[in-house]
Length: 495
Image (cartoon, rainbow, N blue to C red; front, side, top):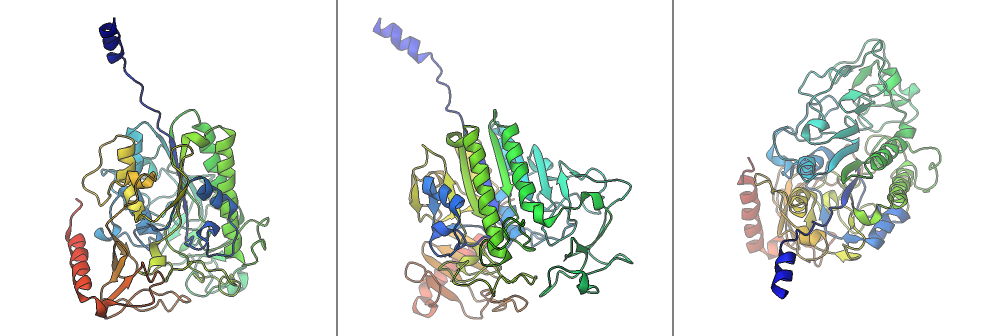
């Protein structure tokens, strides 16, 4: 009888445990110190803090890059963007820079049975060049693995200022076709440069071309009036689309890449948030983002999906204050510190350029707490492939750090290449910025340190998190070792 029972049980196939939904919330220009659970800022962000309270807060989580297009490219492809030409900050009419024939994060998750969607900021190009905005836009996010997409092509400060749903401009009247130019203005239309009296938000640099909704943008646009967004409603629109996707896919297993636009410029929060932060539009936009995060989390709770969903919240790069518009971001900052204890900001090779909020919550599966493991968004591709039992793409820079992501290991990456102005290298708590020709500062911005210098910079972050003391002269052997490691990383191929 005992033998019979053994064979009976041995023949039973145990069903695999269901995979969780994955909700990846990507903020835009949100700094390490802009989220109150990171302990340095003066803004209260209770909903992002709620994620951290119930989840795992990484103190050393990174993007690959200190600007948006390259960091988003790395997130979705698992590849360092500096390996590929054309991955810098893109104009709004750029062609898609992610090849449609390579592995991607949404493709991997589709193979695992996920319904995949993207809502929000894209900024990775669309089409194959000479794009016609009035017909089917292809390739789009749908060609790199997303089943559903509702996006802005680039950023709020670049034309076209329209939404694109599954490869077509939403709400477009074809009798008023869209025309886009990044070379010449359209005759007869006002611009920020020639008609500043029409602006409801002044300029500090750039952003002086097409005027839409009283805001001057980068690039020129005419037509498409029925499809134009209202900046004040942008955050609500993306939040509503994210919630709609969750509702529609609630009975399935889904991956949603929810790419918020806050607090990127132009900062035009909805009137219900105006003045709430006491820090001007940038602070108000962060409060708007936090409220949107709260509504999405509430929807998961309402649909009884909280325990079935892994939520990852992060940002595409570090913070910036004056980024082209007169919105009081510097003057109204007060005691708030967007970079927290870190040096640098967006565009910078210093830590604040790429070290960002990085929180993961999966109730009952990831124990709440903090982790100082060195983590990077480029590794989500390999880590989630491993998690969903899919083949890990070999021709990438993505490393599997699933145990660290789930809070079961303290060790993450051993080394990480950071792309600011120059490339930099992290090795454990050591940080090297090699000698380079980059400028010390971006003069068109306020207090933006690039990290340039003709002498190597070496920092021991275990003692000097703010990168104040360059110890390169005291540790020439470490400089030499890390320089070789960086050179080797640059020489490695991923194709």
